[in-house]
Length: 147
Ligand code: SF4
Image 1 (cartoon, rainbow, N blue to C red):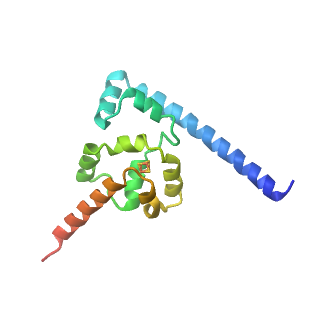
Image 2 (image 1 turned 90 degrees about the vertical axis):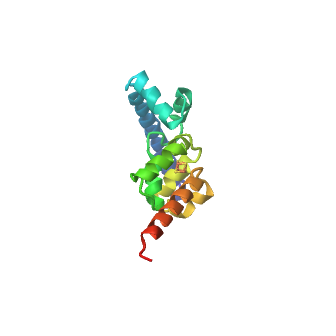
Image 3 (image 1 turned 135 degrees about the vertical axis):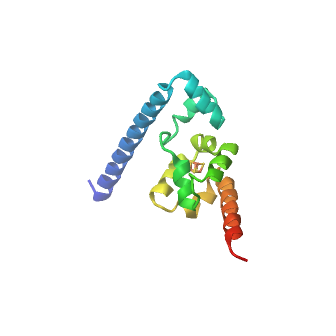
């Protein structure tokens, strides 16, 4: 067997294992979420603008158990804990957009490679929201400069 074929086979095995582990994490996350109790879960879902069936469908997406919104914000230079960021993200349903995002695998690859900030404009459904948050941040920094 050529070394290329061996390497390709090993890569395929690693990918299959990673997918299997990811699905298991997602199943555990979904189970833990619903273990909080129906009332609390319904309140949390309502807060981010999702129905229970949308949430369950989203739990089958790649890396469903991971919070990409916080990582993505940090990557593009937005403070995810800032009051205005939290308010804006809530009003624009940014969490919902992330949880249901069809590009989670690509997002994960770029976050892992630390190059999300150079590529997210090509695919991220939250890109316009990030731009608005960055513009707000620039305006608030300009407002602080002495004239
Ligand atoms: S690509 Fe954007 S919307 Fe999709 S998961 Fe990543 S940060 Fe969220």
